Length: 250
Ligand SMILES: O=C(O)CCC(=O)C(=O)O
Image (cartoon, rainbow, N blue to C red; front, side):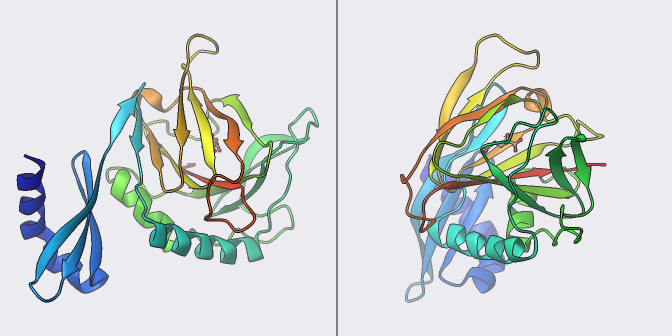
């Protein structure tokens, strides 16, 4: 059954993608994400991997959305962003330092300090945020094709012991637009709760390359990261986890 479906997709799309991706390419098809390698000798495609997107409490999980070369390329693009907009350790409005370090790309960056949680058009050093890298935009467009393009790509860096408490994303103007979260590096234990505070929660280890879409009923659900498995991935030479949280702000 899956084979038939893959063949159909291959026939429909191979010519458009072949030129761009040469020997290796990926397709998003309904719930299936499939990766092929083209065999130039025969012109046929070999199926390399297929993962299935699924929902937990309305959170749409795309496991292994990015393969390793795509993750490496994305980390490189983020290094460029961080040269212009270095990571800072934010403090909550009550003055408590957060354990994650943060930066951002896009028209807006989300920041917190003694003046409160908010979006700002400049890094705390006064410079405008760098543009969102095209690699990041293409993930958003693939998993949230109906949505407006994101205006903020928050970059969270989790070192050993860092976590993020359960919270709602509600500083944006339009809750019909989804939030997309991209995981890179070490595994992170992602907790998914309810719209109201409290009640039962569900947890899932997010791995490097996974993407989560928080739209519809999940858009205002509480969520957070309880802990990371420091050193579980070799993607970042010094360990740690990067999370990109993409949002439409206005
Ligand atoms: O690190 C994560 O996976 C979640 C980050 C998050 O919830 C946020 O930035 O609002």
